Amino acid sequence: MNYLMVFVGGGIGSVMRFGVGKVFSKYFTQFPLSTLISNLAACLIFAIAIYYGSKELKNEWITPFLIVGLCGGFSTFSTFSFENFQLFHQGNYTLLLLNILISIIPGILCFYLVSDKL
Image 1 (cartoon, rainbow, N blue to C red):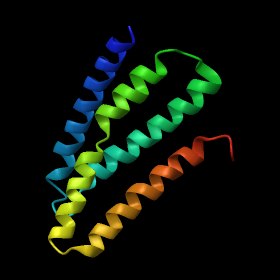
Image 2 (tube, rainbow, N blue to C red):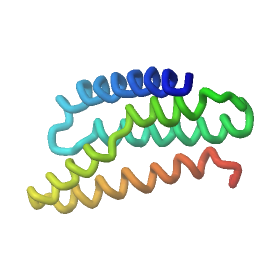
Image 3 (spheres, rainbow, N blue to C red):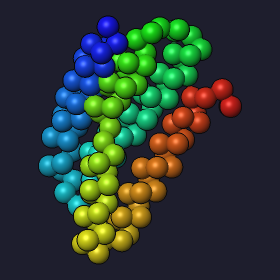
């Protein structure tokens, strides 16, 4: 059953990623906004799923469906890395640094905000 949950969640996450890419890539050609949105949204979903999955829901489908499947299909580290390489190769160091900073720091912040450390 877990494999089915990963499969379904991954399919949904991949379609979500494709949709975000289609919407934002035609409006933002210089900056990889669609990857940023997908990765940060996946971090937030992941953080909420871990927090509520372990504290409130206690459901066995949280990890395979939401975390591994949906978040795995929705986020993309390989695209993030490739787009940063492209910015580097183009000599666009300001956007490169900006993309790295606003992708990683808010991603970590998503986990902090939903943790019980507040």
